[in-house]
Length: 367
Image (cartoon, rainbow, N blue to C red; front, top):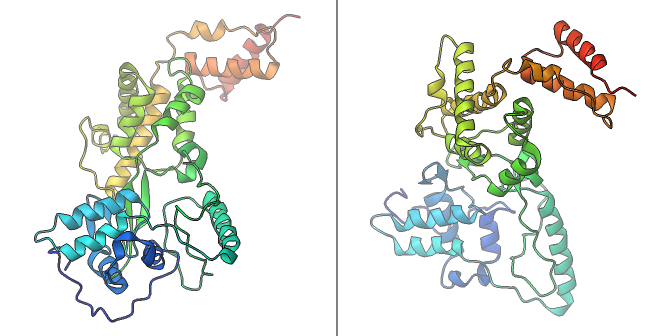
């Protein structure tokens, strides 16, 4: 019913309960302070947001939540979608535009200022602990909280928190594919792509990653930990590889990863399906396509581990010597890595253990 820009069919007089602590509730609570709401009706906004727009696909893989969105880029997509309808509904366009505006500062009596400032400080403290995106409350029995005041509020309010990077959020908040409620008659969870933070990738490469040629096993392990247990699209993985590795290193990683995948999956599917050269038409909402994304990430990590051929410089593993100021623990760990990297021998196997003991004693620093 929203595809043609039609007006709400539900009678405007019907009361529609909007859950507290939702973006739509915030818009309604601050109605009088929003410059674009003059002459507009709250009930019409509710009908447009929940009935006309709610659960509708407003761009590729992006759906408008029933009770609105706090994300500016989602609000912009809503306006593009509404204004591209044919024929255009001017009223609907005006109501969509309200989502692009920010409420003006409220004016409170002097005896209320301290109370409002205290509430705002408590809510900002919660904001530091509560990561995006907004998730609707699971049940109305949840203890309600006061609506979040507008960003530009009274003078003397605490400053807004700075942007938190992906590395500061931790692995749990690093999802390029973010789950969102899609609304509709039977609400389901959908997946939208959230861009990576290039600054975090550069910082990881500079301070943590290490050198692929010298320590492919360590690079694979550290990158795997950095990525966390998350899904990454084909575009995301290409961006990660492009920022962390040279063209030659990427070729080495791809060849090694695909060779190992095909050896492990003789019955298929083949590696070129999981890691195509051209951008595949994978849909974030398709479970099979999300499996492809997970397998691509597996191939990349395995490819990094196996990118550097082993056994070509075995003498280097046995030529290592303990340094004068190196502790026995550090010496043993360095010897383990050299043995694993240059000989292909597993240090935990009986053969590897025997070689380790021999080299550890023979090449230790002489006091």
